[in-house]
Image (cartoon, rainbow, N blue to C red; front, side, top):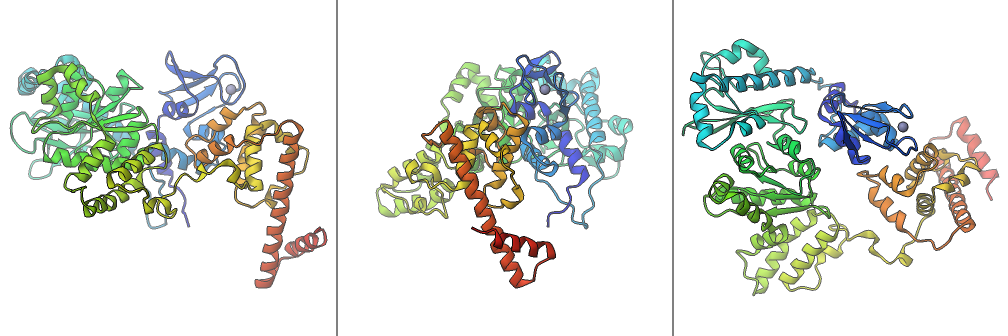
Length: 571
Ligand SMILES: [Zn+2]
């Protein structure tokens, strides 16, 4: 049994989500002064009076008075229950909804305090970089890397001095709670001390943690804040906030390995790079990046570790490669990193390399075939068996089909067994010719109503008892009815918008395109007929259920009456 959603999780969710991104994913927003505006999705209007404010994390319509937070937006807009809205919202930010199970006490929620302390500490480090005598080695280091004051400010670079000032100012326990790496041996001190410090910010600009780089050759070269309640390394990337501040819809995003790469690229004019935080590139990282751009270019160091990281990132990317999304791989020559490349060859040449990055399919098959001899059958069989698991991870669609076609070509086979077997890999279910599609009454009803929202009048004219309709597909029909009831003039595009990113989205897309070749009154008759069949199906099901229950455990008085009524009124 799923338990209750912990209150602290809901709070955390609201802290994490950005309502501007959320609303924008349903209703495209335009920036206007301090807020973002659109025509209100909750009432018909010609000029925008619907505003979303990032600082308040609220939306409000000056026309109809609709308003609330991210959760209420989802509830109203997508017609969700509270729990469903929480689940969708968690999905949107890439979290899994935890459930309270009695044993686990929810953690004390002090997220807001942690964010505040991290922000203050970031300012502290920046301030310390300006203390002429102590910070000189750090300033010299940054200058030696060719970094301007402007870039240092943009990335809020700081310096952790070799003293106890940080601990004095913020308190040992508070720092530990916020995830500062403090040395506990002997005298407690800031483990970042003597390092250049990079605040790691989320896309909303909140400091989540820090990275620190030594100024000499001592080890470890980089040190990061540990994971905390607010800092999840496999979900955050370095540099995204700075990137989005320059361009909220970049054509592509380059992923590099190190913070210094991101900063150096920015210094040389390439403002669309991010870095993972000392962890492998995860599916969550890519999902995050794909929200802002449809192309992600992996540009890892030209060494063994970098190449291994590229392959792992490609593996992680496969499940995210829906049509329209692209991952490319920019391999650097031996022992070159992106920082070196742009320093030595400049922005233009670097960008040419980015543009010429290898497509994922080329890279994938090249890697997979490099140790195989495709001239013999064993080699080709081995290729198919190696590729199989990977290709199954790619979502159904054109890209997957292209990859499969490529595999067939390389393996010199016409047919791949695992493709035709629906239990392993589902070919697009709806690619069958339309004549072949047997539409159930539920599908006919959904499809007709989607395409002709005015058919709602047919339902309004009869007394619908939805509780009698318990067949598959009824939830969706009901949802559509609810939407149309609340927005009587809704059209198909807006109806579809209601299902964007929902589990029903794909199904809706197919049902919307089903052609009935009828119009006017015929539509009404067809729809009415489908509803009749649904009701009678529902009654049959209910009848079967009551009869079965009567035999198994007996019926309540109400159920007995119901059964009797159904049996006597049966045609
Ligand atoms: Zn409104």
